[in-house]
Amino acid sequence: MKSIYQRLWLGRAALSLFFLSFTISAMQPATAVGSKSVNVFAASSLQVQYIALAKKFEAARPGVKINISFGSSTTLASQIVAGAPVDIFVSADQASMAAAKSEITNPTDYVINQVVIAVPNNSALTKISGLNGNVKWIQCAHTAPCGIAADRALAAEGGVKGSPVSYEASASSTLAKLLAGAVDAAIIFKTDVIANKSKLRAIEFADSQAASSQYQIGITKSAIAKKNRWANTFFLYLKSSDIRKALSKAGFQVDSLK
Image (cartoon, rainbow, N blue to C red; front, side, top):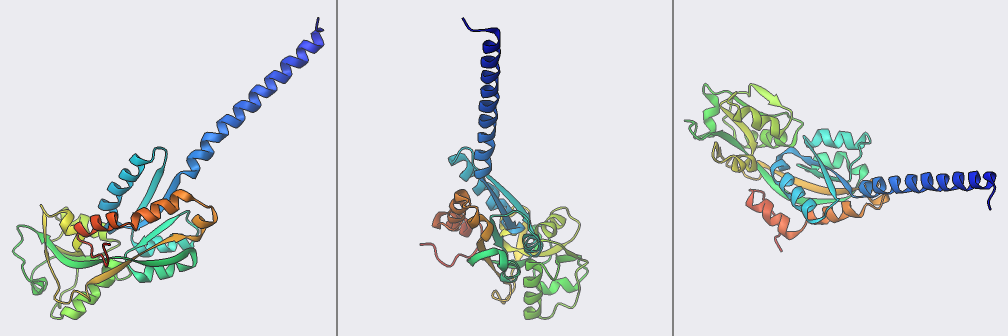
C-alpha cells in the first residue's frame, strides 16, 4: 500500500505531465498555421484578379492563408526595403522592382498593362485632345507606375496643354475618384476600365508602347531563407499558364501563354 507521500508525488508528476502535454499540443497548431501563411505585396491594379485567385488557391488547400497588400508599387517597394514581412512582390513597373531588388531573388517580367483615358460611358469626350477643354481630369502621381506611364503617353501624344486637377497616390485611388463622379476623366490602366465596363469606356493613346508598363514578379530572399514552401507554391501558381490566361482575359498583355 502506497504511503500518502508516494500518492502525493505521483499526483504531482501526473499533473506536471498533463500541463507539459497541454503546452506542446497548444503550440503545435500555431506553428502549423504560421507555416501556411503567405504574404504578398501587389500593385493595386491587380486587386480584382488577385483576390479571386487567392480565394481559389485557398479553397483547394485548406489551412493555407494568402495575405495580399495592394498599393502603389513605389510605396510597396519602400516598405519591403524597410523590412516589411513579405514573401512575394508583384510590381507594376521595373523601376519599383529595381528599388526593392536587394530583397528580391531574380525578379522576372510578368505581364504588361497600358494606361488609357477613362471616361463614363455617357461622356461626350471622345478624343484625347478633349482634355484641353473644360474637363476635370486626374492621373496618378509622377512617381507611381501609372503616373510614369501617363507622363510618357501624354508626352508622346503631344497636344495636351491642360493639367490634371490632382495627382493621386495609386491606380486604385485614381479609379475610385472617377467612379465616384468627382472628375470627368482619368488616366488609369486599361484593365481597370475593362473591370468596370458597365460604367466606363477607354480612349487609347496612339503610342501604345509609351503608354505601356512592364509588370515584374519576384520572391523575397526572406521567403527562401524561411523555406516557406507555400510561398514558393503560390509564386509558381501566379506564374502558371492558367493564371496568365486569366490575366490576359482581364486585359493584361502576356508574352507567352504556353
